[in-house]
Length: 78
Image (cartoon, rainbow, N blue to C red):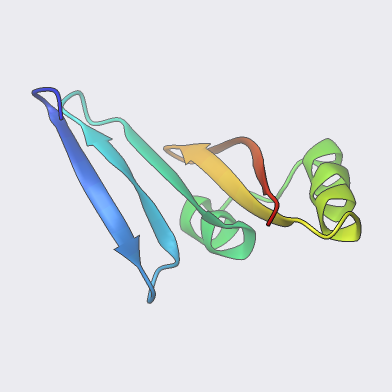
């Protein structure tokens, strides 16, 4: 891991993992509801639609955030 980057391991309690940067920036990925709860930010409508599309296709969605801003979703498919 590069200097100034601290990994945040996945936790079953938080359902999140991520990185903490030396400049104070934080990045998290995890269960959509966990990221929404962490950021205190509601999902943008377009992202909510994408997450619904992922679920309908049989995939699992993860949300990604930087600080209190939700950046997008990851589509996991087995």
